[in-house]
Amino acid sequence: MNSYTEAVVTVLTLIVGVAILSVIVSTKSNTVGVLQAFGSAFSNALGVATAPVTGAAVSPNLSYPTSPMGTFGGMNFPTFR
Image (cartoon, rainbow, N blue to C red):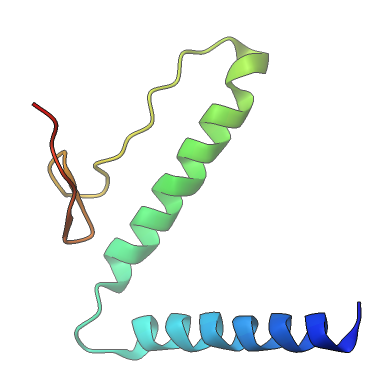
């Protein structure tokens, strides 16, 4: 890896680290919701990855942890009519 790529990876790693730290430490953060969302995303990814092998039909759960369909993490996604 050349020095430019190493510098870019280092900066990006530090940005992600600061973001993680701010989510954990902040009094306004929803740490439990963030961890549940990460777990749900990981679970959905595993289900999709293993579906061709297991033959299971996978429909990812996009509304986890406690949001209604169409919103996730306080962000409103467009609904199609």
